[in-house]
Length: 129
Image (cartoon, rainbow, N blue to C red):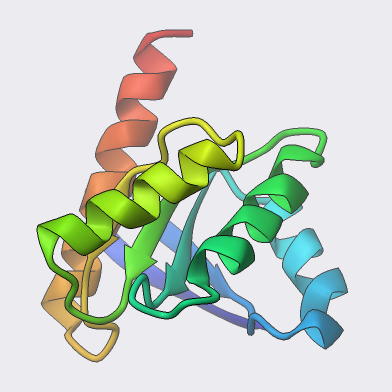
């Protein structure tokens, strides 16, 4: 796993943790997710196996005592139709609507924007508690 921090100013810091997606790192991923309030699941929605992989990850997160808010991060460009098909396929597998954000992981600003979406959703979630 990898860890880092982003200084948000005013004394606030965002702590980040990352874990590879391979099965052999499942124990690390579960540990990181168990301590998280929000998470980005990075995948290529164009990949034929993406729906099954996302579904398995979402099932695993749902089994946690306190599940983090999930956003799916599409790391490659996908048309609106491809994104809709991916989301519909996840719903057909019994999952609720999961926000889908497109961002290139090599582009710092796009990743900060994705984290901004996650932070905004977390803020809305906390207001509704």
